[in-house]
Image: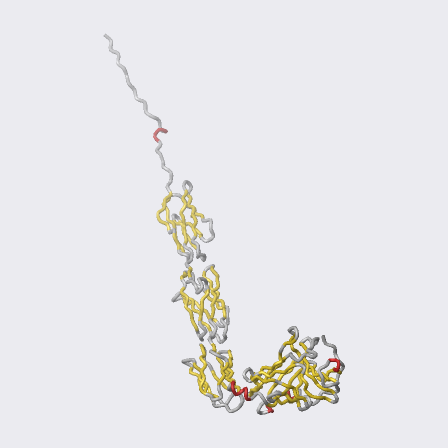
Length: 460
């Protein structure tokens, strides 16, 4: 018997089948300074990598540099309110990563002014001051745009300090203060109140008996008081604001004085007039200047007013008048006979203010002068009034026309012409001291009326 033996053999892999697997290189963050304040600064990004690293930034405010596995960061200051951010791109030969870097904006805030805007108000006093707190992180420059304002920034308290000079005017004033922080520029409007200087009244009427009068004065600045008269004395109480005026008894027709008050750059006056209204009625009659205009030049006759006539001695005329002592009026009617001149009879007629219409033979038209006190200066007062009135179809009175009639009758057929025409006539009583009369009146005095009658003008 024959035995057959089998043989089993094993085959192994060759050398290539013995190679090992290698994983890709890793790029990971170890640490990163990713957030910066508005002031900027430096920081770094540290990575884990076995390969060479590159880093890039695509904004100007962030610069980068690489040292081994460290990326150095330099962040510029941010001068804007808005924050900002960007990505730093890290790369190796086999990997890449982005790291976000952000920066805060500056802080700036200012409280609202008086009107909900940037307007702030100061009073009128010397060195009036306002302190405005400011929230800020970038520092601040402050500049006044007005000579009367000084402005500065107090970095210790983070506040704007504004100081004003005294406002000595009765009007408020406005100035600007420029502020700048970071990239922000704006103006503050500063309003300084007007100084206070108000008089309760600007004139006083005092009876002849005299006495003590008072005027309240509102003021925010010192007040000085001066007077031009020796018949009253002034005493001002600065705390109460009351000006007391002690007035002596008056034994003349009337008198006037002036109190001058000064505060800051303002000057005000109070006129003090002393008289009794009832006494004026008793003073109506007397010597007057009978004033008028001729060719726009002031003229005047010396005249005497009696209870029933205005007499002009230079012409030997007497104009009938009616005096109302309650109303202090002197009234004249048209068509009245006033006297003679040469061989003519003089009648008083009225002409309107246009010089075209007249009263002719009417005796119903009335012109009246209402007398009131007139200040002649230096405390001298006298009575004065201008003649006014209307006639016909509401024609406004303008002139007295003294016509030359050939007979003593108011008949226009007998009118030969004009003796005298007085435009805008009036009465000014001669003061107790005649030298106090206005110089222009003295220069205007008329003694005669020249060659008359003049040619006859036809009126409507």
